[in-house]
Structure formats: structure tokens, C-alpha cells
Length: 70
Image 1 (spheres, rainbow, N blue to C red):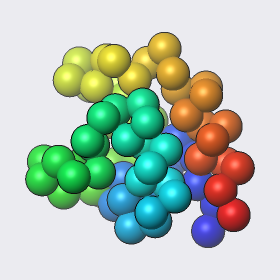
Image 2: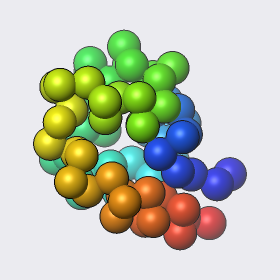
Image 3: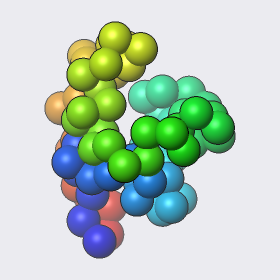
Image 4: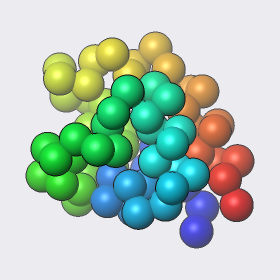
């Protein structure tokens, strides 16, 4: 499965490599119980919320790293 900013959060969290990339840019995100509430959203949509504003400067890098996962 290919990953990107357009992947659903729940799919990213199911893959250890993808979850590690997310944790790199948002420490502890994969272990945060609130992530289950946004599992149906894409990472791009989640990053548009004010609570995830810290991700915005890193979206391009995050997307590249997710796409590199095989």
C-alpha cells in the first residue's frame, strides 16, 4: 500500500513504518488515543485543523517520507 498525505490516518497508524514517520513529525501521535477519533480523515485534512498546525511546515517532507515506504 502506498502512503501519502491523502492516506487515511487509520491506515497510516496500522503500518509501523508509516506510524514512525508520523511520530517523527508529531511526537507520540501513533500512541495518542484521540487519533482513533480522526482515523477516517486523511492526513492532509487532519493537518488543516488548528490543533495540527505544527505539521504544516513539514507536510512536504512528511509526504515524501510516507511515499518512500514500500
